[in-house]
Length: 502
Image (cartoon, rainbow, N blue to C red; front, side):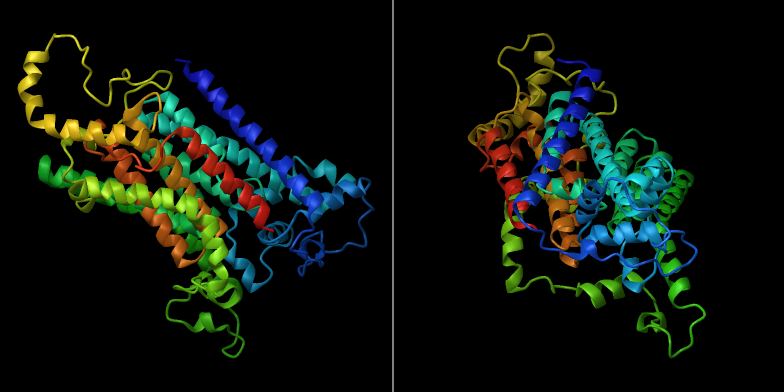
């Protein structure tokens, strides 16, 4: 077993190599096919005179024109909005659909580290370059934190390594390396969960709050704090029977949850102040007059026709087909888990045994595997020491263990440590399906939010509150036969994303 530093460096290496391969594929496709979106060439001057970049006439000609044009031509789709906001601020109503974390970081990086490049490639190309560097660096850090988080949850550094590698090959990779918010959101979310599992609740809250500055989906990350608070308050009230501790747990949980939600609320207030305050009744936009003036919901409905079930159209069938492999993996994991442990699922983990409610990796070093290959099932070669004491306790569970072992062997899905396979699947596949649907499929739809909630629930229940190691083995997806099939499926969808997404 390699040490902690060896696996950490290996994860970083895989993440970096995957980004280089992905960028090479992007360049290859751009050289073979013309871009579908031609909005990259549209770049009017900024409306505000406060920004010094609003006048193009006073700028000297760039020296590396071809390189500058190549970078600017790659700024398409939502990237146009992020670069425009970084350059000119929030000028139009529809720009408020894009939260400020990525544009602010792009603006800061372009004005500091990359500012010497402006005479060579121009300001807009520098902004684009800053966005690419930020997102690819964020992806590498997200893979690093995913490895650390998986090592804590799985108690197995080898499976944590595999989970991180699958994350590097996820079908939504093209969005993680473009000027989109996927990488930064993943970094903040995974980093927040890592610190939450380590017990650093305040640091975790800060990371999760930053995810709310990156994407509107970040408000859902408050659910992790609420879930933790729910179980801690239950334990304080009904197990320890301490009313004072219960009140404190609920109070701090509520404050942390509000802190995570606050960035999104503050941004809505910022939009209301800019768009509504000081306007006459005739000048006000319709959403300004609403009882609860939510700018984000109005923009999504008005400019992108996002609403309940509006995405379910015949013309969207190719997109659903494109998402079906990863979606089917995630849904089968969730359904199979619910069938195996319905009581634990319905009770939100309250009916799980007490030892299984603890974070499974709280005391396991990252540099070694937790236990031997016998973690999942009882071995026939165990020593006799202590076996007599546990024989009576094990007899009632013999039938269940035999069923679990038969079920698991029928899957014939082989990793080195079988018992933690479903945890790996839930971590990697639910995360990939969540990002593929929420991000690649016009992900601000309500449908995307529902899928994200479902996937996150599967991760929460299957990783933290799985009743036993045998249950983790039993919750493997039946139709997966070997690791190569999973990797092949992911690579096929990766190719499909490159081939069919403009």
